[in-house]
Image 1: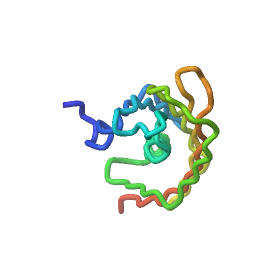
Image 2 (image 1 turned 90 degrees about the vertical axis):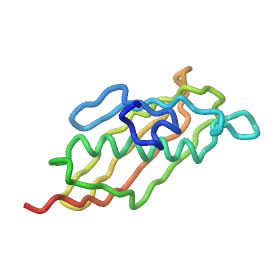
Image 3 (image 1 turned 90 degrees about the horizontal axis):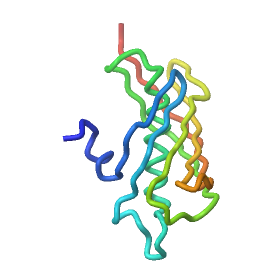
Image 4 (image 1 turned 135 degrees about the horizontal axis):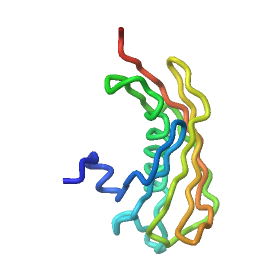
Length: 128
């Protein structure tokens, strides 16, 4: 048992490091995420980005009762990759009482940029 949610395990995700406003998350792309062309599928990369951005935001929430949900996620794919190990450096851009914005960059094992992400998340804070 990894302690991570099932979808994290399915995507091969682990948290590499975290700071106050950032997180580095790694994906070991599983076989099912490889497209017929031998590259990591964009949908898997999108899920990866969404999760990494959420981790960066969660570092600044008040407690375990606070919740976030993706409102919008924009992914710009810069290159195809057949590399199975990807890292997303995610950073919190803005956090208000009800909305958070985060950005991230995915690179492969050769340090080539694969994708950039920008996400807007709804924030539901616990009631005092």
